[in-house]
Image (cartoon, rainbow, N blue to C red; front, side, top):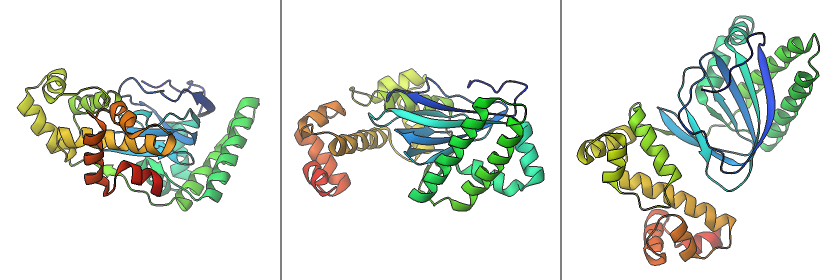
Length: 275
């Protein structure tokens, strides 16, 4: 469970610097607070019971209470962000004094993207909020409330539509745990019977459950993870195709190239050159 806001506070804000491989160890849920995060550096994957999405530098993530979620890195870039936690009391005040639909829209989206100019404005707003918060003066919370109101309305009015992957049905805890294990151990030789056993199911039942909830077979989902990671290594490193193949769980360079070409319509080398 995430750290709670102190009982006497309506809002907290911090700037965090975390290692590239920082990951939430399990699904977590905030009982009473909302959160808004601005990613400054790093690349994160967020999984909820309803879908998953990737967030990158300049993106804003939002999370309402009572939604289980888990985040982890999908690159080797160190993770820095601003994180605002908002009490349910302040959330209720915003909805009463400003607009319920605006509040709900911002927190239902989970991922908001913006133009470069607006990313700059959002970062400046969060810098100002952190400065006020750290002073801890008698009137700081009142100023922070006004700044938060401005921020939420700005997020609502300037977000750019971004694609997300939604699951066919709400994911069960067993499938979420299996997905997280696959995301963290894709470089290893992962076999369906072993993952099914970890979930406590037979191979056949787990396979059907996984496909019905995610819309993908176990193999398809694992391949997608590996291809995505391989694309990142192709773009961000000078490692050879064979090295990348072994680092992402493929049995060899030729097999990796074959699978990559079928999914991307070009060889790994061509992908690296064209991008």
